[in-house]
Image: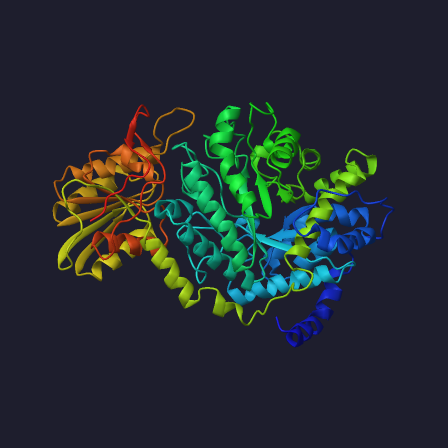
Length: 618
């Protein structure tokens, strides 16, 4: 933001801020002792004096506050809605996001949409104004340390907090299918530039997990693929892209979440890899990220019996300090995954988990389930010596150094009026579509059905996804087809299957979409109800004799549930660009150049249906 505009904005907000911070707790400095020297980072020598001066000005309370990255409710720092005030009261006992910042002086804030009805994200100018307001609240509190403002914007269909007008990039596994480091870098650069324009300073990406478990319920297409080398190359490229775009990068989920059968949001997974497997499969992407200069690494709430039996990696000194700091030599920030996930809460109560994580080696504690409890627990641990002052200073030193290296002390505000011109810029949208066009994989074309010729035909669009099927039908209609849409949801009912069969018998072509038709119930080892129902729909449509094109819109493993289908494609997501790219491939407007970034097992898991790297062209 230009200096004059920044000054005007600060003056206009001053009265709001005075009200916002009134009643905040006493943050009078306490005796802290001499700060300990922590491990050096890239710019440590350059910023030693500034970091030291800041540490000497900070109270223990302020230092503890810097360890936390918290959520706030509302779209305005000073004037949130009544609903947002109620959320902030429930979580923190205050009304506004600015008052939350004043109460805890946290190191960072993370934006969400639906979580706890936080509702932070609207249009670009609104988000930029929220970011400016939060930074203003932080700057008013001595010694004026800026906030790190973070978000999960991985790209693709699953974890992207910013929807339209933000550019929707294809996501990790689609990039893995495209196999282009340049495209991975471009994709991250677009995301980074758009986040920076609205005041977000850090993206919790790239996902650097190697997905070798087809039944993984939480990673899947969030991963680049199942080849450690491919994941390493493309994740490192994204780290560089985020930096060029203007935000810091966070590699996750260390030491690897790609071979789990339990979602750590709801349980505590165990990764049973040996040390040799860990070094061959899980760690190489993180080593590549570190070599690429990644700023932060996020922990996983997983147990590694080969290193520290029974202890989640987030709370494991052997994993965070021994493996990540010691063996891999990482000297940047370590942030926990959200501490309110069951992978953390199922093992440790809310007053124990944050202390354990700090003692293990974490620098930042992400959204604890009870902030007052967590803050008090860490503060008490420091005062009692359980967490030494030197240990506390090491983490705070890294946090301050990160903010200095990223230029946040000098340039914490953004131009809200300019944000709409950056987010969703035409050149970003065009680049994202071009990248996406290079990711669709043609798995099977046994009957030579593809590419289709444009022109009149009756097409039934069936299967999963209300928006996806309508978007697909519109794209087909634009190429001359007369379409009928029979969307049947995640779990098609027998009535829906019968209706689709009847419509298919009168159609010239069927295009059916699936979403996790290979999903397995971890408790039984059998297909989930939804997967079984989608499989039944596809098989029933194939039995009509009408030509059928099957497109797996999420995980590429679906084909294992209907291996007899003669025409199958994978899109690795269902953004509008991915649907458009699918149709372009169907009609031969672009060549299907995507190649499987994972191997596809047979339905019973005893063999391989398609090898990694498989993919057909025209």
